[in-house]
Structure formats: structure tokens, C-alpha cells
Amino acid sequence: RTPQEEQAGFHLPPGFEIELFADEQLIDKPLNMAWDSRGRLWISSTLEYPYPAKPDVVPRDSIRILEDTDGDGRADKVTVFADRLNIPMGLIPVADGVICFSIPNLWYLRDTDGDDQVDQRIMLLGPFDTSRDTHGMVSSLSRGSDGWIYACHGFNNQSTVNAQDGS
Image 1 (tube, one colour):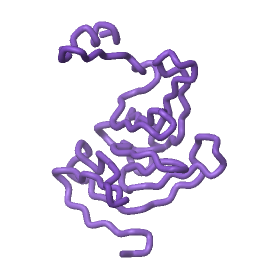
Image 2 (cartoon, one colour; image 1 turned 30 degrees about the vertical axis):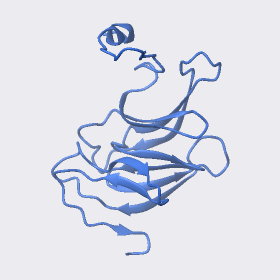
Image 3 (tube, rainbow, N blue to C red; image 1 turned 120 degrees about the horizontal axis):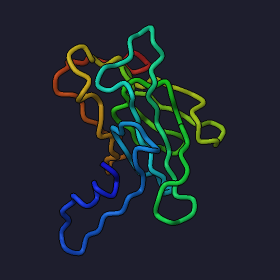
Image 4 (cartoon, one colour; image 1 turned 45 degrees about the vertical axis):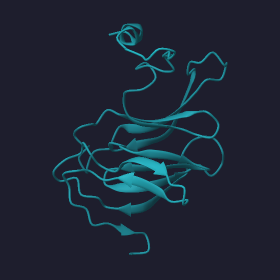
């Protein structure tokens, strides 16, 4: 269905309206999205889901930044921040990049030169178990009022993970 047909099917409470910011022409299958402090929408976009790329295959998923540069309420600029990801289920923008899950690890993807493309990939935690399921992995990353970043873990896998320092 077209985006307009989809919009027509929404049932909104009185006083609410829905506006189209982006559609499938700009993204593949979106899994997670989050706004950054500059009003840009970060989206994890997948071709692999629900079957992860095999270890000997380069994964085709990405994290993209969508922007409305002309102020009309629609995304008109798409930047691929990071590619070669494997079912990037969760993400949260941070000051110089994004923290995201990509099978099998939780990553800190840094943009060190300000061009909105990843320059440094730092593994934070992992590997997470994906042996039984890829549907409910690390996702829903959110900031707590205590300064920590919290996330959900999937419902069907058993993960015991290590930080970079071995803890």
C-alpha cells in the first residue's frame, strides 16, 4: 500500500494528526528509530532480518540518518552512518555516534571527524546468544535519569556477555 493509503487507515484521537516523515523509498525494513538532539531520525534498516548473515557473508544492514533540511516536515536527506551490520535491532544516538546492537555484539559506533559516517567500531558487550531467535535481541535502548543507558534483552536466548575489560 502507498504511504497515503496507510495514513488513511490510522484511527487517531480527536485533536491528533499524522504526518509522513519518511517511507520505504528511503529505508528498507526499519527495526528501531530514535531522534537525536539535532532533530534527525536515526533508523536501523535491515535486509537480513529475520535470518542473520552467515559468518562468511558480509551483512547488508545499516544505520541511516534521515533529515529534513528544507523544513517541509519530510526527510529529504539520507546518510548511511554505518553499513555491514547484521540485524541492528537497537540503537541510541550519542554525542559522536550511536550505540547499537548488531549480531552478536553491542557496539559504540563513533564518528571521529564529523562527517556523519562511522570511523571507529568499539565492541561494548558481547557476544550475545542468537542461537534460538533473532526477533527479540538487544533493543529499546533508552537513557535513564541516572545517566545509564538501559536496554531490553530478547525473550528466547540465554546470554552471558563480557565487557571489553573482561568483566
